[in-house]
Amino acid sequence: MEPRVFEAMLHFIYNDSLPEVDDDDDGEVAAMAQHLLVAADSHVDASTAATALTLAEQHHCERLKEACFKFMENPSNLKAVMASDDFLHLTRSCSSLLKKLAKLAA
Image (tube, rainbow, N blue to C red; front, side, top):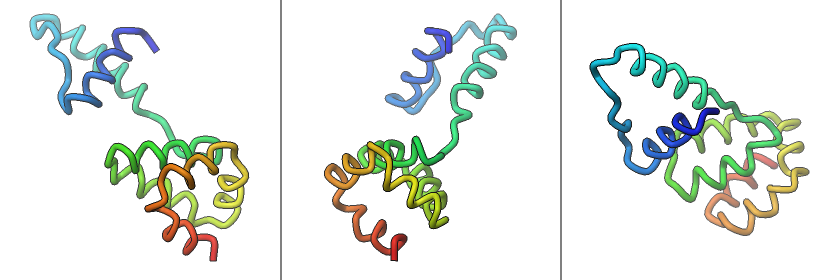
């Protein structure tokens, strides 16, 4: 990811708005939009679910939490997430999620 794209992504995350770009340069606007789309094209898998869920809980990202829980509804996915190094951190830092995680495991 290009540094300017990363900077724009962080700006959006913390300000809920896109940084200003030169509106006169349609190519720059389109290029930035394309790069941000690529940066946002992440998916939940066993190696990212625990960390993503922790961050989603801490930063009130409801849709990301829903995506993580939907991924973990599959018993084999849940088992893989629970075996990950980041799962312990999730359980320690987000005790509010333990009840829902226990329901998934049952």
